[in-house]
Length: 247
Image (cartoon, rainbow, N blue to C red):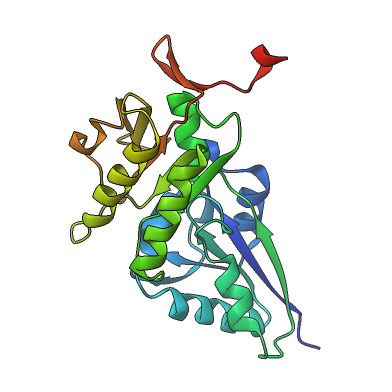
């Protein structure tokens, strides 16, 4: 009787092995096959050793997932790695979508990881101590007009906003739109933290304001955290008040 295949969708966190959960590391160690974007495979090389690798380039996510499912359907134990958390702008949803209707007898487990907003928040101080929103400015999979609508709603909410994929080489319009919308609703002196390569080699952080943050260097490896009316700079750290002083 053929063994039942297993597919682990593994969030590897920011990329440094020290910030990977024990469970995620264990799943990688017991897997026969590890699948993922080649840059993420490189990050976990110390854990996976000489295991069988399935790798594809950027924008080949569907192919990568289907190959991982196919390997698991053959009875193998497969880990599909994602940076950050597998369920936050990750591959977990796509796995379930592509498995729908296949009839594959596969056990699936999603292993959570440290997502970029949490990693960046820890570096900046404590900006996420109350309600916050995450939003991606990538319009590859989401229509631009929907991204703009979400930016406007986020700006009006007065919630701290973590911004993923702020700019790319070809896409700079949406970060300007975000700046305009947020300045309509928040004070120009509101702190904005910019962290690039959070908790991995090459890490860089900067704290600016809504008025000046567009002058900072940022790319697809950056995450922005835009403060709200309760966000302050305390001893050089970005801190959002939880509200204890109002009790």
